[in-house]
Length: 207
Image (tube, rainbow, N blue to C red; front, side, top):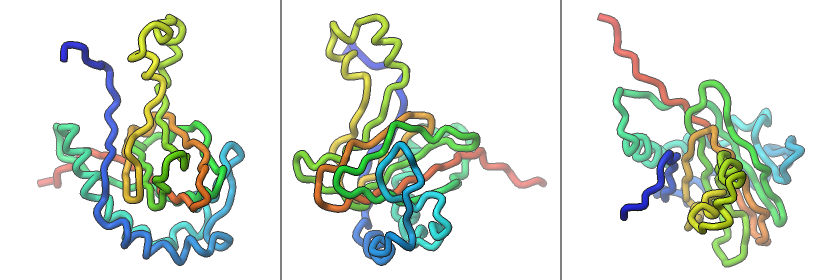
């Protein structure tokens, strides 16, 4: 095809293999929301373990082992030119009940390279809501030109909603990309995990 996109951001959308085991490990904690979750954010409506003193008590190692193959697959597909290490800077869980949502935000901060959203529980029925959306922060330049009113391909560049999304889906994206979630229209609980990663050049040992 001669018409190609340029200046692309690279994201990963893949399916993990052991979501059932992760859900089994986390279920006892999800049933104790008053003990492990709170609502510290003004712009969002959901429960989260982010910045909660008991966040570290959750069985994160079970989840980390589940996503490692996907994380390595993504990094290798970017064709690294140096040996590297991957460090998880922080991770947390979010719980969305009906009509809960997450506001537009990013994870830009020194030392963060990539971030992720993992869907532990997601109603896949039509019109269940809760879609994860990535925002093109440069789209304002497109709108200034008015070209989005002329061509569908430019109009579609304002945001990107990965599909399909279901239990066990992992989305990895650059930490500076803005993103948000639509309200959960389902009566079922929607549970996601987020994390920030740092990719470092692997130092060779002295001598």
